[in-house]
Length: 61
Image 1 (tube, helix red, strand yellow):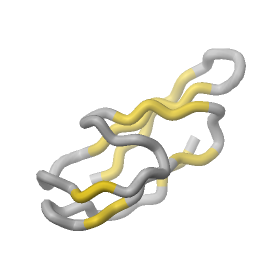
Image 2 (cartoon, helix red, strand yellow):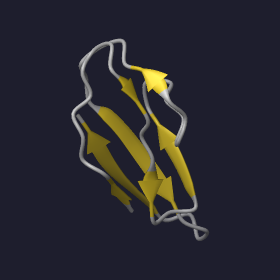
Image 3 (cartoon, one colour):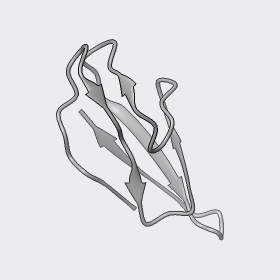
Image 4 (spheres, helix red, strand yellow):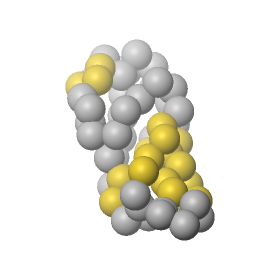
């Protein structure tokens, strides 16, 4: 699984999305591929799972 590195600053519009997995679960109430306005400068972590249930994680900050 891979997430494109990008800087997310408070108030910036941003869309985060992962590649290489079947499903993605982001923290901080973020949905994969759905735009949002960042409310804080923070790290966003995603957990990606494949069809076999194997998981991996990555961060965007």
